[in-house]
Image 1 (cartoon, rainbow, N blue to C red):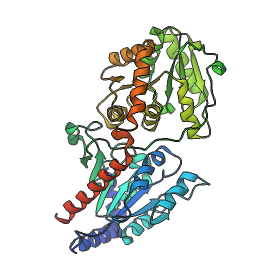
Image 2: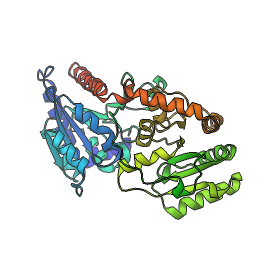
Image 3: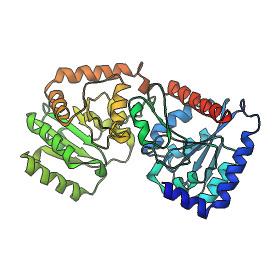
Length: 396
Protein backbone atom coordinates (compact mmCIF):
# COMPACT_ATOMS: atom_id res chain seq x y z
CA UNK A 1 0.00 0.00 0.00
CA UNK A 2 2.94 2.32 0.59
CA UNK A 3 4.08 1.58 -2.96
CA UNK A 4 0.59 2.28 -4.28
CA UNK A 5 0.50 5.53 -2.33
CA UNK A 6 3.85 6.63 -3.75
CA UNK A 7 2.57 5.83 -7.24
CA UNK A 8 -0.59 7.88 -6.65
CA UNK A 9 1.47 10.86 -5.50
CA UNK A 10 3.47 10.55 -8.70
CA UNK A 11 0.71 10.32 -11.33
CA UNK A 12 -1.82 12.46 -9.39
CA UNK A 13 0.60 14.97 -7.91
CA UNK A 14 -1.51 18.03 -8.73
CA UNK A 15 -4.69 16.58 -7.22
CA UNK A 16 -2.95 15.34 -4.08
CA UNK A 17 -1.32 18.72 -3.48
CA UNK A 18 -4.54 20.62 -4.22
CA UNK A 19 -6.48 18.58 -1.67
CA UNK A 20 -3.71 18.82 0.93
CA UNK A 21 -3.51 22.59 0.67
CA UNK A 22 -7.28 23.03 0.53
CA UNK A 23 -7.95 20.90 3.59
CA UNK A 24 -5.17 22.70 5.46
CA UNK A 25 -6.75 26.07 4.68
CA UNK A 26 -10.15 24.86 5.89
CA UNK A 27 -8.61 23.57 9.09
CA UNK A 28 -7.33 27.06 9.92
CA UNK A 29 -10.90 28.38 9.94
CA UNK A 30 -12.99 28.20 13.11
CA UNK A 31 -14.89 25.02 12.26
CA UNK A 32 -15.12 23.44 15.70
CA UNK A 33 -18.91 23.87 15.96
CA UNK A 34 -19.91 23.37 12.33
CA UNK A 35 -22.46 20.86 11.04
CA UNK A 36 -20.30 17.93 9.95
CA UNK A 37 -20.45 16.65 6.40
CA UNK A 38 -20.11 12.87 6.21
CA UNK A 39 -19.45 11.19 2.90
CA UNK A 40 -19.88 7.45 2.35
CA UNK A 41 -17.85 5.88 -0.47
CA UNK A 42 -18.90 2.48 -1.80
CA UNK A 43 -19.88 0.29 -4.72
CA UNK A 44 -22.03 -1.92 -2.43
CA UNK A 45 -24.92 0.26 -1.26
CA UNK A 46 -27.50 -1.99 -2.87
CA UNK A 47 -28.76 -5.55 -2.39
CA UNK A 48 -25.39 -6.65 -1.07
CA UNK A 49 -24.09 -7.58 2.37
CA UNK A 50 -22.70 -4.08 2.94
CA UNK A 51 -26.00 -2.61 1.77
CA UNK A 52 -28.04 -4.72 4.20
CA UNK A 53 -25.79 -3.90 7.14
CA UNK A 54 -25.13 -0.18 6.60
CA UNK A 55 -28.74 0.79 6.02
CA UNK A 56 -29.56 1.12 9.72
CA UNK A 57 -26.86 3.72 10.22
CA UNK A 58 -28.34 5.74 7.37
CA UNK A 59 -31.84 5.22 8.76
CA UNK A 60 -30.99 6.56 12.22
CA UNK A 61 -28.54 9.32 11.26
CA UNK A 62 -29.39 12.70 12.82
CA UNK A 63 -29.69 14.89 9.73
CA UNK A 64 -30.01 17.98 11.91
CA UNK A 65 -26.44 17.45 13.06
CA UNK A 66 -24.90 15.83 9.96
CA UNK A 67 -25.06 16.32 6.21
CA UNK A 68 -24.91 12.90 4.55
CA UNK A 69 -23.61 12.34 1.02
CA UNK A 70 -22.98 9.10 -0.84
CA UNK A 71 -20.40 8.56 -3.58
CA UNK A 72 -21.11 5.51 -5.71
CA UNK A 73 -18.02 4.26 -7.50
CA UNK A 74 -20.04 2.49 -10.15
CA UNK A 75 -22.86 3.22 -12.51
CA UNK A 76 -26.43 3.10 -11.26
CA UNK A 77 -27.52 -0.56 -11.05
CA UNK A 78 -30.61 -1.96 -12.68
CA UNK A 79 -33.69 -1.44 -10.54
CA UNK A 80 -32.68 -2.27 -6.99
CA UNK A 81 -35.09 -1.22 -4.23
CA UNK A 82 -32.40 -1.07 -1.56
CA UNK A 83 -30.15 1.12 -3.69
CA UNK A 84 -33.04 3.47 -4.38
CA UNK A 85 -33.74 3.57 -0.66
CA UNK A 86 -30.18 4.80 -0.03
CA UNK A 87 -30.60 7.57 -2.58
CA UNK A 88 -33.72 8.75 -0.78
CA UNK A 89 -31.92 8.87 2.58
CA UNK A 90 -29.08 11.24 1.71
CA UNK A 91 -28.60 14.90 0.88
CA UNK A 92 -26.64 14.11 -2.27
CA UNK A 93 -25.85 10.98 -4.28
CA UNK A 94 -23.03 11.07 -6.81
CA UNK A 95 -22.17 8.46 -9.47
CA UNK A 96 -18.92 8.12 -11.36
CA UNK A 97 -16.32 5.51 -12.25
CA UNK A 98 -13.53 8.04 -12.81
CA UNK A 99 -11.36 8.16 -9.69
CA UNK A 100 -10.27 11.74 -10.33
CA UNK A 101 -13.81 13.04 -10.80
CA UNK A 102 -15.07 11.33 -7.64
CA UNK A 103 -12.18 12.65 -5.56
CA UNK A 104 -12.70 16.14 -6.97
CA UNK A 105 -16.40 16.02 -6.14
CA UNK A 106 -15.69 14.91 -2.56
CA UNK A 107 -13.22 17.79 -2.16
CA UNK A 108 -15.56 20.38 -3.69
CA UNK A 109 -18.42 19.17 -1.47
CA UNK A 110 -16.12 19.92 1.49
CA UNK A 111 -16.68 16.52 3.06
CA UNK A 112 -15.23 16.51 6.57
CA UNK A 113 -15.14 12.75 7.17
CA UNK A 114 -15.05 10.30 4.29
CA UNK A 115 -16.13 6.79 5.28
CA UNK A 116 -14.86 3.97 3.08
CA UNK A 117 -17.19 0.95 3.05
CA UNK A 118 -15.21 -1.14 0.56
CA UNK A 119 -11.63 -1.41 1.85
CA UNK A 120 -9.54 -3.50 -0.57
CA UNK A 121 -12.50 -5.18 -2.25
CA UNK A 122 -12.30 -2.71 -5.17
CA UNK A 123 -9.28 -0.80 -6.42
CA UNK A 124 -11.35 2.21 -7.51
CA UNK A 125 -12.08 3.18 -3.92
CA UNK A 126 -8.44 2.70 -2.98
CA UNK A 127 -7.30 5.15 -5.67
CA UNK A 128 -9.81 7.76 -4.54
CA UNK A 129 -8.78 7.46 -0.90
CA UNK A 130 -5.10 7.61 -1.79
CA UNK A 131 -5.63 11.15 -3.09
CA UNK A 132 -6.93 12.22 0.37
CA UNK A 133 -9.82 14.43 -0.81
CA UNK A 134 -11.23 14.68 2.73
CA UNK A 135 -9.30 15.75 5.85
CA UNK A 136 -10.41 12.68 7.81
CA UNK A 137 -10.76 9.27 6.17
CA UNK A 138 -12.18 6.23 7.88
CA UNK A 139 -12.73 2.57 6.99
CA UNK A 140 -15.84 0.75 8.22
CA UNK A 141 -17.28 -2.62 7.12
CA UNK A 142 -15.67 -3.75 3.85
CA UNK A 143 -13.08 -6.40 4.50
CA UNK A 144 -10.71 -5.51 7.33
CA UNK A 145 -8.58 -2.37 7.00
CA UNK A 146 -6.77 -1.58 3.77
CA UNK A 147 -3.45 -0.26 5.04
CA UNK A 148 -3.66 2.77 2.75
CA UNK A 149 -1.49 5.45 4.43
CA UNK A 150 -4.15 8.13 3.92
CA UNK A 151 -6.70 6.29 6.09
CA UNK A 152 -6.78 7.72 9.60
CA UNK A 153 -9.08 5.32 11.44
CA UNK A 154 -10.46 1.81 11.24
CA UNK A 155 -13.71 1.32 13.14
CA UNK A 156 -13.87 -1.84 15.25
CA UNK A 157 -14.92 -2.97 18.72
CA UNK A 158 -13.23 -4.66 21.71
CA UNK A 159 -14.07 -8.17 20.51
CA UNK A 160 -13.33 -8.11 16.81
CA UNK A 161 -9.97 -6.35 17.40
CA UNK A 162 -8.52 -6.33 20.93
CA UNK A 163 -5.90 -3.80 22.10
CA UNK A 164 -3.05 -6.07 21.02
CA UNK A 165 -4.12 -5.77 17.36
CA UNK A 166 -2.99 -2.16 16.98
CA UNK A 167 0.63 -3.10 16.20
CA UNK A 168 -0.54 -4.78 12.98
CA UNK A 169 -2.38 -1.71 11.66
CA UNK A 170 -1.18 1.53 10.14
CA UNK A 171 -4.61 3.04 10.82
CA UNK A 172 -5.59 3.99 14.35
CA UNK A 173 -8.16 1.44 15.50
CA UNK A 174 -11.21 3.31 16.77
CA UNK A 175 -13.17 0.97 19.00
CA UNK A 176 -16.82 1.60 19.60
CA UNK A 177 -17.93 0.71 23.14
CA UNK A 178 -19.71 -2.57 22.37
CA UNK A 179 -20.11 -3.50 18.71
CA UNK A 180 -18.87 -2.22 15.36
CA UNK A 181 -22.15 -3.22 13.69
CA UNK A 182 -25.80 -3.36 14.73
CA UNK A 183 -29.05 -3.90 12.88
CA UNK A 184 -32.67 -3.53 13.91
CA UNK A 185 -33.48 -6.83 12.22
CA UNK A 186 -34.08 -8.50 8.88
CA UNK A 187 -37.07 -9.04 6.62
CA UNK A 188 -38.11 -12.72 6.52
CA UNK A 189 -40.28 -14.18 3.78
CA UNK A 190 -41.85 -17.62 3.29
CA UNK A 191 -39.51 -20.64 3.18
CA UNK A 192 -39.22 -22.59 -0.06
CA UNK A 193 -37.60 -25.78 1.24
CA UNK A 194 -38.78 -28.54 3.57
CA UNK A 195 -37.01 -31.56 4.95
CA UNK A 196 -39.26 -33.88 3.01
CA UNK A 197 -38.19 -32.25 -0.26
CA UNK A 198 -34.57 -33.05 0.62
CA UNK A 199 -35.32 -36.62 1.74
CA UNK A 200 -34.35 -35.82 5.34
CA UNK A 201 -36.25 -37.50 8.20
CA UNK A 202 -38.28 -35.27 10.51
CA UNK A 203 -36.27 -36.40 13.55
CA UNK A 204 -32.86 -35.81 11.96
CA UNK A 205 -30.34 -33.23 13.14
CA UNK A 206 -29.67 -30.76 10.35
CA UNK A 207 -26.41 -28.82 10.09
CA UNK A 208 -26.02 -25.97 7.64
CA UNK A 209 -23.12 -23.97 6.24
CA UNK A 210 -24.24 -21.14 3.95
CA UNK A 211 -21.11 -19.36 2.76
CA UNK A 212 -19.59 -18.45 -0.57
CA UNK A 213 -17.16 -20.94 -2.03
CA UNK A 214 -13.99 -18.98 -1.34
CA UNK A 215 -14.70 -19.11 2.41
CA UNK A 216 -14.53 -22.91 2.49
CA UNK A 217 -11.17 -24.03 3.82
CA UNK A 218 -10.55 -27.79 3.58
CA UNK A 219 -9.32 -27.99 7.19
CA UNK A 220 -12.55 -26.46 8.50
CA UNK A 221 -14.66 -28.60 6.16
CA UNK A 222 -12.95 -31.67 7.65
CA UNK A 223 -13.96 -30.51 11.14
CA UNK A 224 -17.53 -30.11 9.94
CA UNK A 225 -17.51 -33.65 8.57
CA UNK A 226 -16.08 -34.95 11.85
CA UNK A 227 -19.07 -33.38 13.63
CA UNK A 228 -21.43 -35.04 11.16
CA UNK A 229 -19.71 -38.37 11.70
CA UNK A 230 -20.15 -38.22 15.48
CA UNK A 231 -23.83 -37.24 15.51
CA UNK A 232 -26.17 -40.08 14.48
CA UNK A 233 -29.02 -39.33 12.10
CA UNK A 234 -27.51 -36.00 11.07
CA UNK A 235 -27.32 -34.29 7.68
CA UNK A 236 -25.22 -31.46 6.31
CA UNK A 237 -26.73 -28.78 4.08
CA UNK A 238 -24.26 -26.83 1.95
CA UNK A 239 -25.25 -23.53 0.40
CA UNK A 240 -23.39 -20.59 -1.09
CA UNK A 241 -22.28 -19.16 -4.40
CA UNK A 242 -19.72 -21.46 -6.02
CA UNK A 243 -19.29 -23.60 -9.11
CA UNK A 244 -21.61 -26.53 -8.45
CA UNK A 245 -19.37 -29.26 -9.83
CA UNK A 246 -16.29 -27.87 -8.08
CA UNK A 247 -17.95 -27.74 -4.67
CA UNK A 248 -19.27 -31.28 -5.08
CA UNK A 249 -15.80 -32.54 -6.04
CA UNK A 250 -14.41 -30.70 -3.03
CA UNK A 251 -16.74 -32.51 -0.64
CA UNK A 252 -16.59 -35.84 -2.44
CA UNK A 253 -12.85 -36.01 -1.80
CA UNK A 254 -13.19 -34.91 1.82
CA UNK A 255 -15.99 -37.35 2.67
CA UNK A 256 -13.88 -40.19 1.28
CA UNK A 257 -10.89 -39.08 3.36
CA UNK A 258 -12.97 -38.67 6.54
CA UNK A 259 -15.07 -41.83 6.10
CA UNK A 260 -18.40 -39.97 5.95
CA UNK A 261 -21.31 -41.13 3.80
CA UNK A 262 -21.61 -38.60 0.96
CA UNK A 263 -25.37 -39.27 0.87
CA UNK A 264 -25.72 -37.35 4.15
CA UNK A 265 -24.84 -34.14 2.28
CA UNK A 266 -27.34 -31.90 0.53
CA UNK A 267 -26.48 -29.02 -1.78
CA UNK A 268 -28.94 -26.16 -1.77
CA UNK A 269 -29.35 -23.75 -4.70
CA UNK A 270 -29.36 -19.98 -4.29
CA UNK A 271 -32.71 -18.23 -4.10
CA UNK A 272 -33.69 -14.98 -5.76
CA UNK A 273 -34.52 -12.99 -2.63
CA UNK A 274 -32.59 -12.49 0.60
CA UNK A 275 -35.79 -12.66 2.66
CA UNK A 276 -36.48 -16.15 1.31
CA UNK A 277 -32.91 -17.21 2.07
CA UNK A 278 -33.41 -16.12 5.69
CA UNK A 279 -36.68 -18.01 5.94
CA UNK A 280 -34.95 -21.13 4.61
CA UNK A 281 -32.40 -20.96 7.43
CA UNK A 282 -35.15 -22.28 9.67
CA UNK A 283 -34.59 -25.78 8.28
CA UNK A 284 -31.32 -25.98 10.22
CA UNK A 285 -30.82 -27.07 13.82
CA UNK A 286 -27.23 -25.81 13.94
CA UNK A 287 -25.22 -23.55 11.64
CA UNK A 288 -21.50 -24.27 11.24
CA UNK A 289 -19.39 -21.19 10.55
CA UNK A 290 -16.38 -21.04 8.25
CA UNK A 291 -12.79 -20.33 9.32
CA UNK A 292 -10.50 -18.40 8.98
CA UNK A 293 -13.01 -16.26 7.07
CA UNK A 294 -16.15 -16.14 9.23
CA UNK A 295 -19.61 -15.19 8.15
CA UNK A 296 -20.76 -11.61 8.71
CA UNK A 297 -24.21 -10.97 7.23
CA UNK A 298 -24.89 -14.71 7.33
CA UNK A 299 -23.97 -14.78 11.03
CA UNK A 300 -26.31 -11.90 11.81
CA UNK A 301 -29.10 -13.60 9.87
CA UNK A 302 -28.52 -16.88 11.71
CA UNK A 303 -28.65 -15.20 15.11
CA UNK A 304 -31.73 -13.18 14.14
CA UNK A 305 -33.48 -16.41 13.18
CA UNK A 306 -32.64 -17.88 16.60
CA UNK A 307 -30.42 -20.70 15.34
CA UNK A 308 -27.41 -21.94 17.36
CA UNK A 309 -24.07 -21.20 15.67
CA UNK A 310 -20.65 -22.77 16.05
CA UNK A 311 -17.75 -20.49 15.21
CA UNK A 312 -13.97 -20.81 15.45
CA UNK A 313 -12.26 -17.64 16.71
CA UNK A 314 -8.93 -16.59 15.23
CA UNK A 315 -6.65 -13.58 15.46
CA UNK A 316 -7.54 -11.60 12.35
CA UNK A 317 -10.57 -9.39 11.85
CA UNK A 318 -12.17 -11.80 9.36
CA UNK A 319 -11.80 -14.65 11.86
CA UNK A 320 -13.50 -12.77 14.70
CA UNK A 321 -16.68 -11.40 13.11
CA UNK A 322 -18.97 -14.13 14.40
CA UNK A 323 -17.33 -13.94 17.82
CA UNK A 324 -18.15 -10.26 18.33
CA UNK A 325 -21.67 -10.73 16.97
CA UNK A 326 -22.39 -13.64 19.31
CA UNK A 327 -20.98 -11.74 22.30
CA UNK A 328 -23.10 -8.72 21.43
CA UNK A 329 -26.17 -10.96 21.19
CA UNK A 330 -25.44 -12.35 24.66
CA UNK A 331 -24.48 -15.83 23.44
CA UNK A 332 -21.31 -17.73 24.35
CA UNK A 333 -22.50 -21.26 23.59
CA UNK A 334 -20.83 -22.27 20.33
CA UNK A 335 -17.75 -20.03 20.57
CA UNK A 336 -14.67 -22.19 19.99
CA UNK A 337 -11.05 -21.14 20.47
CA UNK A 338 -9.52 -24.32 19.05
CA UNK A 339 -10.37 -26.87 16.37
CA UNK A 340 -11.15 -29.38 19.10
CA UNK A 341 -13.64 -27.03 20.74
CA UNK A 342 -15.25 -26.39 17.34
CA UNK A 343 -15.95 -30.11 16.97
CA UNK A 344 -17.02 -30.45 20.61
CA UNK A 345 -19.56 -27.63 20.31
CA UNK A 346 -20.83 -28.97 17.02
CA UNK A 347 -21.39 -32.44 18.47
CA UNK A 348 -22.88 -31.15 21.73
CA UNK A 349 -25.35 -28.87 20.01
CA UNK A 350 -26.31 -31.65 17.63
CA UNK A 351 -27.03 -34.11 20.43
CA UNK A 352 -28.55 -31.76 23.01
CA UNK A 353 -31.95 -30.58 21.80
CA UNK A 354 -32.69 -28.85 25.11
CA UNK A 355 -29.55 -26.74 24.78
CA UNK A 356 -30.52 -25.76 21.25
CA UNK A 357 -33.94 -24.65 22.48
CA UNK A 358 -32.37 -22.68 25.32
CA UNK A 359 -30.10 -20.82 22.89
CA UNK A 360 -33.00 -20.13 20.56
CA UNK A 361 -34.97 -18.65 23.47
CA UNK A 362 -32.02 -16.48 24.53
CA UNK A 363 -31.58 -15.21 20.99
CA UNK A 364 -35.25 -14.34 20.68
CA UNK A 365 -35.15 -12.48 24.01
CA UNK A 366 -31.97 -10.67 22.97
CA UNK A 367 -33.85 -8.78 20.25
CA UNK A 368 -35.13 -6.41 22.92
CA UNK A 369 -31.93 -5.98 24.94
CA UNK A 370 -28.74 -6.83 23.06
CA UNK A 371 -26.40 -4.22 21.49
CA UNK A 372 -26.36 -6.21 18.26
CA UNK A 373 -30.03 -5.40 17.66
CA UNK A 374 -29.98 -1.77 18.81
CA UNK A 375 -29.06 0.16 15.68
CA UNK A 376 -30.24 3.47 17.08
CA UNK A 377 -27.78 3.30 19.97
CA UNK A 378 -25.09 2.11 17.60
CA UNK A 379 -25.72 5.12 15.35
CA UNK A 380 -25.36 7.47 18.31
CA UNK A 381 -22.00 5.86 19.08
CA UNK A 382 -20.87 6.21 15.47
CA UNK A 383 -21.93 9.85 15.41
CA UNK A 384 -20.14 10.46 18.69
CA UNK A 385 -17.02 8.91 17.16
CA UNK A 386 -17.28 11.22 14.13
CA UNK A 387 -17.57 14.28 16.38
CA UNK A 388 -14.58 13.19 18.47
CA UNK A 389 -12.52 12.54 15.34
CA UNK A 390 -13.34 16.03 14.09
CA UNK A 391 -12.43 17.70 17.38
CA UNK A 392 -9.12 15.86 17.47
CA UNK A 393 -8.41 16.96 13.93
CA UNK A 394 -9.25 20.63 14.61
CA UNK A 395 -7.09 20.65 17.74
CA UNK A 396 -4.22 19.07 15.84
